[in-house]
Image (tube, rainbow, N blue to C red):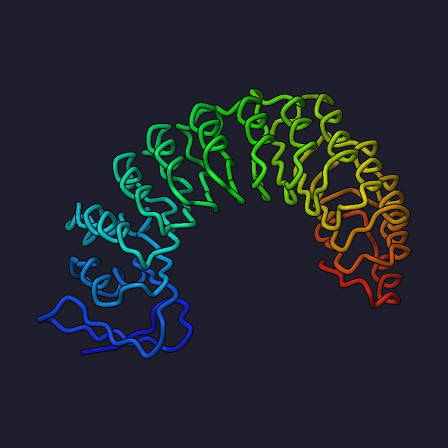
Length: 351
């Protein structure tokens, strides 16, 4: 018999494992996080997770399901199918509020349809679930999910995203790596008034019209635009629209190699923006920093990997709201920048 710690617990939870019984649980306090992958790697037997759910009901579980790394183990393949049954039963439990299934190759549209029937689940992390399609995702339209990560689910199209935008009360949505999405998805999400945070990768199928639509969203506060495809300067018009009308507090434009000073100067005028990430934006010059130092209300700025010089970085000391500055991998900077910023303790350097 042995005991081991299990995930993040409010107080210590002991699990006693024996050969004769699959699993027994003794709780000294409420269980906050059940990490199925951790359990499975330490107990080399086909665990009946639904028995555990019956033993500890209504505890507000966040369930983490085994992903690809676990499935690659030889003993895990031996018990193929157990995960599917266990997940379906756990998904019907009234105690589960969050399901983390990143990289779960066993998660199919059929299983997701069953999960969608659980009215208690509020958060679903389905990143890199390669078997999911529009069919399973559209089933979520009748659920109570508000936090949804569909990043790198490559089979999704505008059809499912449009349905979710019309019928779910989402506050967080991650669509990075969904390569077949077009402006239609962004236009639908622009009218989704409960949405607070959105992550999306701009592809050749998305134009500046999609970004413009997001600029007029009343409640969107965090926008992560992964601009791996920044077609010439066409998207500058969309970024400037964001600068003029959006009420964003957080904006991420990392790796946007054709982002211009004109865009950043416009963003500096936005009174709501407090956190800006423009790392590895190689076309930017010190003119961008001069504008941010003079006009912005930034608290946090990430310019790592950019080609700014000492003159631009030192100018940021005049921005009295700035508290955090990331200048990692800025190859043109010298000791002069560091020495100058050290004299202004209100700025914490990340380098």
